Length: 120
Image (cartoon, rainbow, N blue to C red; front, side, top):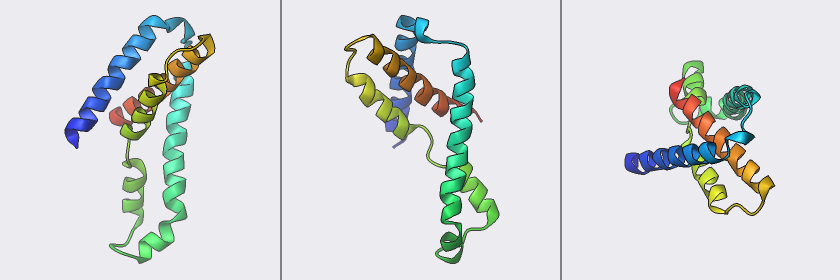
């Protein structure tokens, strides 16, 4: 499991480097702001999704208190699933200029959110 996740992160890092090197004209500085906003929305979505099931989870199984709720919401699955999806999109190829930009942004935002998840 750890080896596969490591390979995923290495592959996406290489793809991000390649895409950024060859298509850096698509990158703008406000994309970093959007990246932080996407990251915050990802964390908020996790809190909301687990909050919807807070009551049943607190009454069943091991029980869920507020400390476990915060830990489960913040420390959920991070990165590998979205990175695999970004790799699948990248594998589709570069048909025209619009698809090149879309692929660049998908890889940038998915990889960036995964990186921020690991760092914070």
